[in-house]
Amino acid sequence: MKTYRRILSVADLSTHGLATARQAGALALKHGAQLGLGHVVDWDHGSNEFSVLTPQEIEMRLEIVVKRKLFEMASLIGAAKAHACVSFLPGRQGLAEILQGWQPDLLVLDARNSFGLVDSACTVSLGWPCDVMSLDIPVPSFHLSGLFQVLAQPLLNHKSL
Image 1 (cartoon, one colour):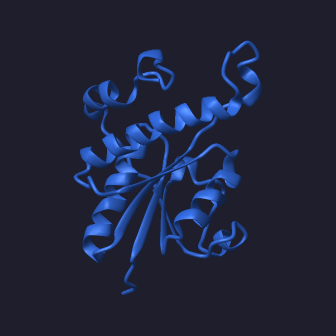
Image 2 (spheres, one colour):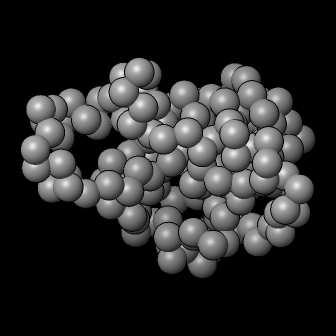
């Protein structure tokens, strides 16, 4: 069996993302590996035409909020020492940025949002070859209420910026 040193879970901030992170955390514990939790932020730079903030200022503030959410997710899965990785590039470009920056041995993805990756050969095209595990984890509805309160707060809460 292959031993992994760095395991990265890239997921959304939903119950599916939490379930994927939980599985990645269990693998990290089993292998004695570092765990990274990543998120590719999907937002349109042109959507805030009347904002007093520049796109770079918005990204700086969003990064703080998204990393906070990733650390909350890490805490929920019992992996308080997990590293948080955030990208604002679209889709696969964002995934490539996170992969190249954190350089994992194993990438764990939610099958609902696998960035079109079907195997480890696909990550070579993204600039960092690693194994890929795509999980299709059913999430029971009873998990939604507590997690929804933790993760469903608006990303642009003016009080937290």
